[in-house]
Each structure stands twice: as C-alpha cells, then as structure tokens.
Image (tube, rainbow, N blue to C red; front, top):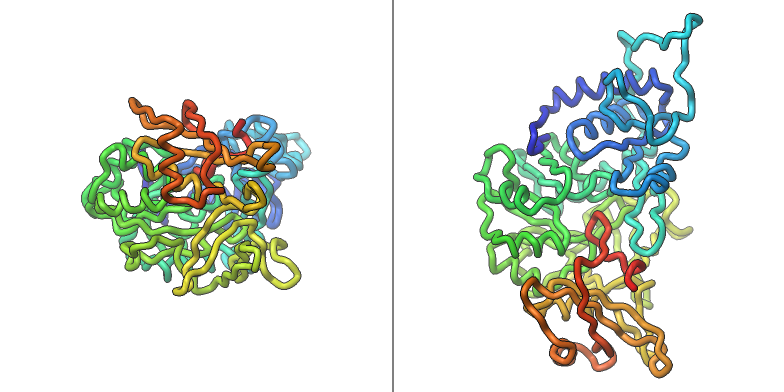
Length: 451
C-alpha cells in the first residue's frame, strides 16, 4: 500500500495487523464482536482493519466527516472504538466508551499483551461477517449493511474478471474508506497481492500528479476509481492521456454521456460501473476493452452476479456478493434503482425509483434531465427535483451551477433540453444557484437536502 506520505509492504501489514489483533483482544474485542474504526484513510486504518480480520472481529469504519452524534450512532454497540493508531500507549476510545471494560489483575493493572499464540483466525467462514458498512444516505439516514468474507471474496473475483488483473496493478483510491467503494479497493488489493494507492480524500492536484506519473514510479496508478464530479474536475484541470492508466472506473451514480465523450477525447480509458453497498460494490462493469463503445453503459453483470429489470423498471440483483438479509424471499434484492438491459445484456441506469417525478401523469427520471443539462458547455452540475404545482401535480424544476466566469439564461437551457427530451421532461423552471451541490462522500447527489 502506498500513500502520498509513505507506504507499507504486505509483510509489514501482517506484522502490524498481528500486533493490532493482540491489542484489540487485550482491550476486550473477541471474534464476532464489532470494532469501530474512526481513523483517517491511510496505513493506520489498514492496520486496524486487518487486525480485525485476523482476530475475527467485525470492522465498522466510521466516516470522520460526520457530526459527533452521527459518529456515535455508527459506533454504538462496538466492543472497542479505535480512534488513535493501534499499539499506541495513548490509544483510547474517545468517540464512544468500550462496551466492556478492560480486565485488570488483582493489583488493578491491565494484563500484559499476549506474548505468543495470538488470537488470530487464519481461516474464516465465508458466511461470517467481516465488516459493517453504512450506506451513503442519499435518500435517508445511513443504514448498516453486514458484508461477509464471502461477499468481499466474490466481489474481488468478479471485479478481476471484468477489469482484468495486472500483477503490477496500482489501484488509486481517493474515495472514503468508510464506504464500500473505497474499502473494497483496500481489500481487493490484499486479496490480489497488488498495490493500493490511498489518498486521504480527493485532491485534484494530488490525483493529477499520480495519474501523470510514469508507469512503475511511486505513486503512479494503473487503475483509478472516480465519480462523475471528480472525473469532471480532473478534466477541467487538464488531465490528458495519463501514461500508466489502463482504466478509470467511474460510477457512484449516473455518469453523463457528454462527460464520457469528453474523457475519451482526452485519452482517458473510462469504464462505467454500477454498484451498491448491499452488493459489496460492483454489480455491473464495462470491461476496458469496450471502453470506446459509442453508447456508454454500466456494462454487463459480474460473472458471479445476476441482474434483471422488473416490469416497472426497477433493477434487481442476486448472487454471492449480496449482503446478509438484504434479499427478498426469492433471493433477489430490489435496489430501488431504475434502468434497462440493452440487447447485449449491458445495464443502462436511469435513476432512482424514489426520485421519480410525476408531472401531468407522466414519469420523469431526474437523472436523465440532469445529464442533458450537464451536456451544455456552460453548466458545471445540475439537480432536478419535483415542485408541487396545481396544474402539473409536480413541476420539473432544475437547479443549475454554471462554470466559473460564465452565465446562461433560463430560456437557453430550456431550449437546450427541448431539443433532446420529450416535452413533459423539459424543466418548467431553471434556477441558477451558487455551487457546489450537496453530495455524499462517494459523490452521489443529496437530493433530500435541496431546497
């Protein structure tokens, strides 16, 4: 694993994780119990994560950007909270008190750290829970999802088949490690024995430097995970023909076709993907070999995953990457996302079922209208919502952020949409606002926060 400040080998990771597992056991964690990890992205988080895996404890990453009350809610019920690096004498659970007090000897001193026979689990039941990941909370409060060792293993295998696997892979992650998209990169790389390049957060200049670095150099990347907004920022900053990059995996929500075309013109090998926390990240992925297809899609399902679209348009998923308890009695997860499968079996995602606007009796997918608005050269980002209206029931309303130093009027944007959309999908009103639009850490639009 590499970071802008340093890195570690898998031998170092093993040693630190073994020491961390011993410390967690001494602090009261046991196999099957939850350990909250409230650390910034980097080696110390990786050590704590793998310490949990060795011990058989359940890792619960905590998003440090959340408010104190939200962090406490995620850590509630954890046997131990790790909010300082493991095997540091000053480590304490400041975010929440441990469920169990540290045992003491008759003299009142904590027991010595085990010197041998570390309480590690070299072999795991694939059905055992490895981590609890909280959803990004785009439409409601974040909810916990229990992901098993088997979920992560099948997801890694499916991703490798879809994207190919280079033994010299260097997968750049600037997604939050508290969410499944980021954490999966860390775990997949360990399963593959390849390098994960971890940035604490998305930084345009740091990411540009990593993507511009020569192949094989420290900090360089052969694969990067992005969302539409971060891809757009990199293009605006001048990203072009990165020398070592073989795939820019882009998802986390709808990706406008105009953005994909712009990236391809800049020599960036964009592969679209669709996934969700309940399916341990990727569900469908466009292989790099198909990255130049005229009509971009989120690709076919992973080899181990099944996808179908219900008559009303809802995407449904089945297979061994599904988390415990999320599927219905028939084994299928109703995702709440809308889409369609094309003639080649690739998935086209059109939006969220709960976001659908009913205007004059017609259904409008906001993501479709947003994609058209963002094709306009002066529009940086757009959000579409339904507003109560006596005539239409809900009026399609667009909130638009323009590029710095530019301006565009409502009439021009409505005409732009009218040339590409059915009349009932054209926004009844377009409002220009100061950006940025509210988004989750994984780049998804927080539509519920729009006013």
